[in-house]
Figure: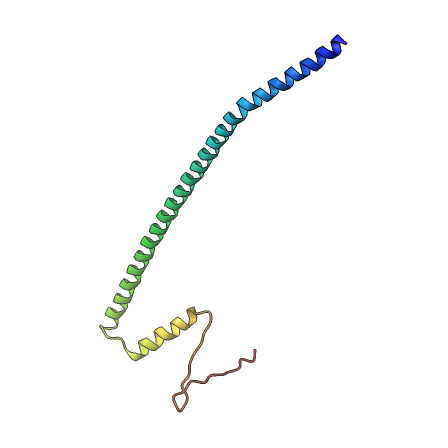
Length: 126
């Protein structure tokens, strides 16, 4: 009987110790957990900021390269006009138009008729 009573008392004391430990430990664990969550969110925000900065740098570099390409294109056009003796002839304009048509994927060409109205429907039998 004494062994059984001491086992029950030991179990009750063990249960009380576990309950007290939980009452003391859980609030501290919750504070620690919130602190870790805050640190993780801060690290994520810092990483997102770095990504935005790198994207902005890449966009700036692309714009600089586009500007350089536009300058080179303008230099080429100026040289072409200089070669044409400073005048652009109708034949040269037609040449530029034809050359531009080769670069376009979807081509819509309006051909005026005798009444200067475009042909609205044409069938391509391919």
